Image (spheres, rainbow, N blue to C red):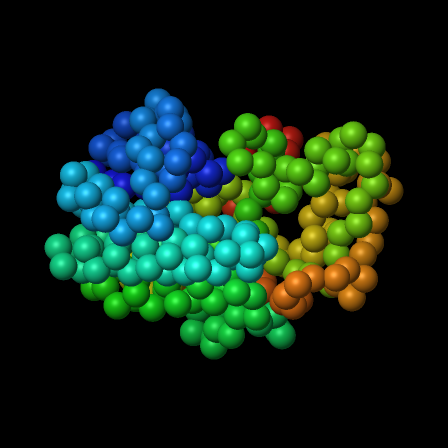
Length: 292
């Protein structure tokens, strides 16, 4: 199968390309924003998702049978600071990809987020109302509608991803763990909950879903509902770090430009039904293995 992977230079994209390169079963085209070079022995093609003509040219030239759309403006702060670009990258680019895929009967898997929910409850199911409180979540929810309008579209809502430190695109987890390793105490919220999932498991799930016939929405998260404090304390212990460096904090103690949802834990019953043998290891096992 010829697969286009967008967001190929990011942390999740790099994991996807590594796995695709090792498997060697598919013809892969990797779109990377502005980054050049290779990932997992696969050449990166710079395609700016805010440039509609560039998307159209790349689609016609690569002519994928499936698109695994992981590219986006991916942080809440980046979206808040530049809403125009966020709209172009997160929503309009997805609309173009969905329209192209629908007109040719091609497969489209889109990575959305648990932040489409308002955080007022726990264990959200796919059919629960999505009411994002962050601008980032609103762009993702708007993009979901375009994917769901395609006959072969699947929305994969990802929870918080984590993994052992890697050179590609350091994220919240990697930066926080690095600070703790330097002996720097850091506060983490005891009242903000997610269902964290290793990058390795997320990539494996997405690659298996893209070749499946599943459509609609599927929640892709871990098995445990954890606060950021619990996640980082367990990560510290697993890494041989003094857990007293992980300090308890509360959302009310921090000032944010936008409100943050308190609990966006995901019910992953559909994922378990679709991929019953998918390995979703806890943080200790991931760090002990030194994998993403």
